[in-house]
Length: 163
Ligand code: GDP
Ligand code: MG
Image 1 (cartoon, helix red, strand yellow):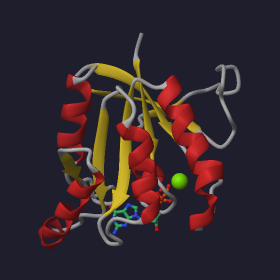
Image 2 (image 1 turned 180 degrees about the vertical axis):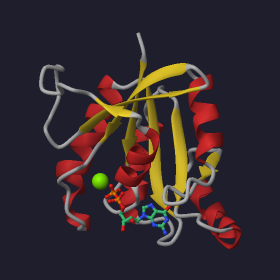
Image 3 (image 1 turned 90 degrees about the horizontal axis):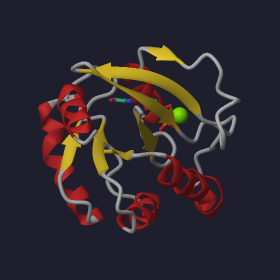
């Protein structure tokens, strides 16, 4: 069985941009998969010969902080249930937000492998801004730019090692 990797995080951090960069093809039929909700996008990818499924969560979520208990929480809980590996995306340009902390709190309780991906690190000058994300209590992180692809190879290397 291929591993299932879910991309989670609050709105506008770049989950869908990362998903689109990582997938090679979309699943033809998504509605037959049990537990599939329509606001999730499914794709397949492979790296170093290892194939895996990828889920982009939160498609319909609007950018407002009071939605956490509704949509984001639901998406994260579902992802933790049905996925083998979680990629938690945050945005270096906004720093740690209360929603990031809430998501991290859910993820810390899980025994599944969590990969913290600090997105929008488009240039080396933004590396220094990454360190505050240690405060999320998830340990090591990967700095990436989903727009220009920076760091995504290192993230993929680490993901497939976990499979
Ligand atoms: P989602 O809501 O988490 O799925 O976020 P999206 O993928 O829709 O991206 C939200 C916004 O962030 C869009 O305007 C993207 O172009 C932008 N974005 C995504 N990744 C990057 C990145 O690596 N660098 C920069 N500068 N912007 C990004
Ligand atoms: Mg999205």
